[in-house]
Image (tube, rainbow, N blue to C red; front, top):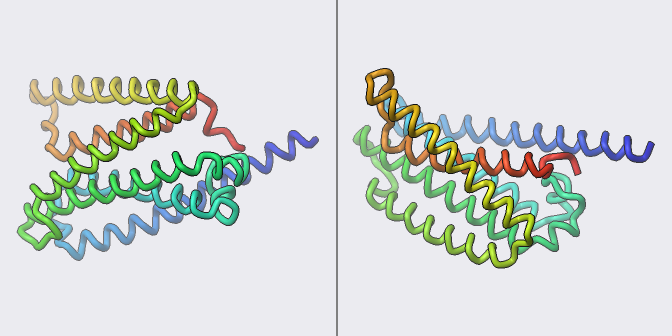
Length: 222
């Protein structure tokens, strides 16, 4: 009876997390689309809008994990898939670093999408496309440094899962490159826009993270 009640409570927690996440995502997308429209969105290429969306997902993930890490009892144990607040406290350094990395990376992706789209539409942008690219490159260097630092504190499970995520990401990129590139070469599809390559790379990493966590049973209610 206790086990059944615990499982039911776990699924209710997952449903609440999904509902709040969906509401936050929907509200953010509405705000983002309004921003695009105000910035001459009718002239924006789909590739820029897709990259903006990918960046938004990363930023939203970083925001949720960051809030959960900062307030483990008030917010974290309710919104994150953890057993209790103590688990967050124990992993605060890694979770905090991941949250900040995702938030900054998402902002850099959105900045690049905005800069390229605004340049194509001949409207004002925060920075030029070149500056946005170099900012993203600097963020990636920092992201790599953080990953190396976190690797040293990982246990065997997390190291194995990290390698699995890398393998899944590589296979997804290989599959897309072969199918899309081959189809474009023989005239069956339009070739990818440069921003599509960025979106596919980070989108594949995002999917691989969920796939790897699901495979290890880390997506189950806790």
